[in-house]
Length: 111
Image (cartoon, rainbow, N blue to C red):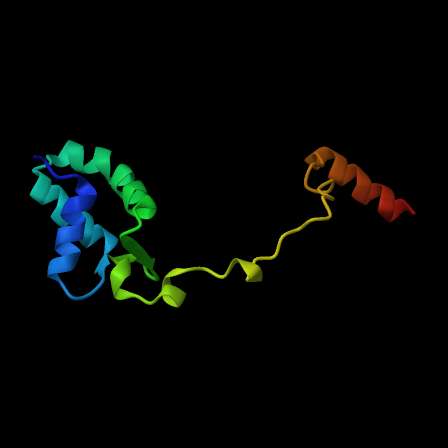
């Protein structure tokens, strides 16, 4: 049975004892899968997406990847309480046309 790209990546990370930069991991996986140059380029985005959604992997600073099982829960989960959300809904400034902004600025200067 043919392994998926993420299964191959899992094996590489399991064999090593440390995180691996994404491009190094992708190069090893693509060589193990027997990808040619075109397949290397065509599959890189899918591989990154697959790593991101596969719960076995942990994205680390510097675009390195490791196995989630090697990290504590607090390391691998983001505290969403600290995320600021703009709830006032006042996006009127962002929706202004550049010409309207120029007109408003010149109106303010005349005042």
